[in-house]
Length: 110
Figure 1 (cartoon, rainbow, N blue to C red):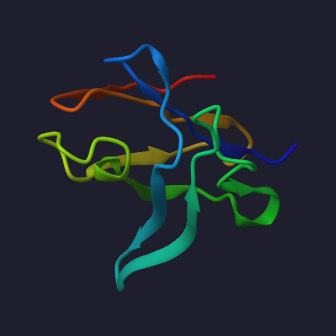
Figure 2 (tube, rainbow, N blue to C red; figure 1 turned 60 degrees about the vertical axis):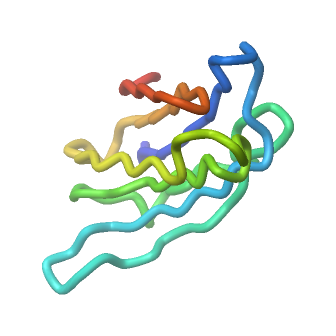
Figure 3 (cartoon, rainbow, N blue to C red; figure 1 turned 90 degrees about the vertical axis):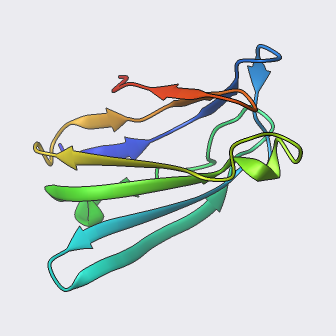
């Protein structure tokens, strides 16, 4: 079974999903970053489809960039880059972003 990559964004200041946040996904290759996806979170703070799945999903180093200024126009944060490694091309990697206008955290979810 092929793996997949998903994400969601939670506004921890309001305790609600962060809708309308732009997200890019790059694979970090030796020759330079390769843009793989551009999307925006839906009203539930999730993307409408996995960011990677099936044949696109392979081992390597990736970077998700969350443009949180879209959601917090007067906040301290502008963008939040999260660099991570995919070691198992058959696993589900879920990389959520929990953020407020002033801070953020992440973890590998399921």
